[in-house]
Length: 289
Image (cartoon, rainbow, N blue to C red; front, side):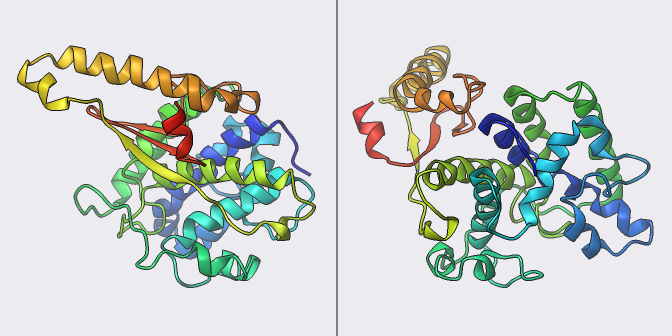
């Protein structure tokens, strides 16, 4: 059985599909690509060009990652939250089952409400074919980053690694409609919110839904900042006052479970130059803040 703190599990969720970066090379090596998608949760098996990500992580972390394609119910609320969160994020855009592992089969009463109609495809950027050359370069970059962790990744570490996966496709090497970075981050957010609910329930099957909101916040008046050409003052407002205020009033309570969270390492926040997007369980907490 995989064990660990909620923080340990959260870090595992943040990198749980990392072996999907190995799929392109496996095809060249004569291995059926589909088989690699289905075994990516086994870091000990998934490797390419002599690279195995398992060597850079502890056996406990490797075991936690392996959980996400198992069947529910599992023994721990963290395990069940991980499995459901992964499938819930996929239910936002996938309409068919894959090997019987989708939320549709796991929790048929929940699945209809989880699906987006039309499906949710957060694609951005230019269409790109994920070539073998790009895959090899990314594998090398990931291996270098993991090697620097000394088998003890921190939240800032995984958020930094995430930047390398922003344009790496989650589902298809030729149709990058959802990035690996986005899938793993959103799944981690789902995991934490679902975990908080499951610890109050007798069974994972008592869980029914996940209410949350993504809220975009812009300092006002933004146009005035740009008219005055005071971009530095604007960025200070966003980065310091707004983000710190949100962290202290909305997210600081999460640090009891996720002690590595800080203003600058907040996985529930997506930051742009002119705005902050935060994912929260109850948007009313933002008005209170």
